[in-house]
Image (tube, rainbow over the protein chains, first blue to last red):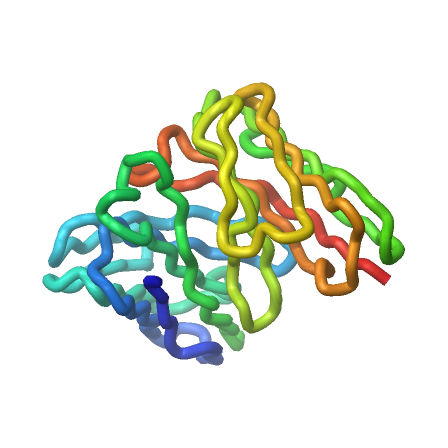
Length: 117
Length: 113
């Protein structure tokens, strides 16, 4: 079965610093999703990547999917306390599930980000 | 739009009790799923539905039942609660599965004593 490994498990950065979170798959990804979760709340959709080499940005957050579509990175520039939370990557398990009859996401275990003022 | 609404937000059960976690969405999404989130385990799929009248098991279905009589509602039933079911439960919906971001509810924090 496909697994998603996230690194690091936790991260503490000083406000204003840049940081990167990685998500690695054991198999080719057919849709990679990044979510953010604040403690006690649900998941907020950030971005979805589909094509090898694709890169998307929203405000100070940039997500990339490598050409082989087995690794994604989430980069935060000039971190702020509002960026603190748990970042999760999710993926569709296989091509047959992409837009098909299943379409359920599997998730990494998450990266806990703390930003010190 | 309210999005995905989960009730209750918090619940404490005694071992052996049964209860239903409610999930409703007003976006006319075909796909709905239930996940549980445990420390160090990430999100794991319990059951899912690809449309009214159609449900299937996910990764960790034991001890849970679901039904999907309408597009809007996807309740999760705990048949006989066990301490191992202490977790945070999330309901999610999507227009058609893969290719679109899922919308998550705010979660139900369940404690079984």
